[in-house]
Length: 158
Image 1 (spheres, rainbow, N blue to C red):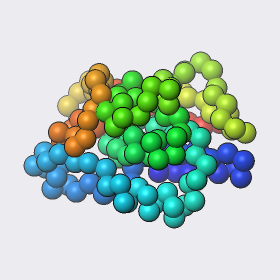
Image 2 (tube, one colour):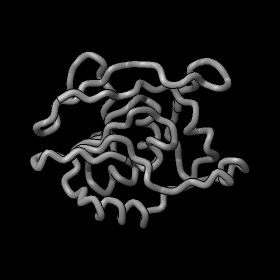
Image 3 (cartoon, rainbow, N blue to C red):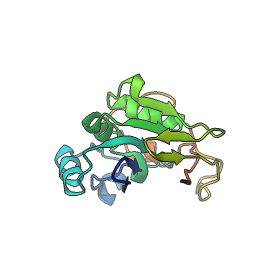
């Protein structure tokens, strides 16, 4: 998670705070956001004015805690369809969800954010991964639900 704070505006880039063990992943044990970890981290960095959360791509180590953070802060979530379905699964209202716009910059306070499509690292099983096409509830059935979705990464411009 990155917090960008201009003193006038706060945005977050990515939303992964909860530790997820490799053992849980290996045995495909369901995983859930640790609300106390999220609350502590947000307090520690003084994330008290977050207006937007931009998820670069929908792998678990970028999007896992997005619903919790969005619900705590009221921030708008910007992401791919997969990311928005992760947020929906956590109960984030539609009014807080925005699909990435690959044409127009988004103005958030005094920041202009532009999304550019690019390829991530190659998928180890081939192809571009799969889209999370329905709301993903926690506990997530297994790590792989967050591992291979389709995702446009997010460079920022000011």
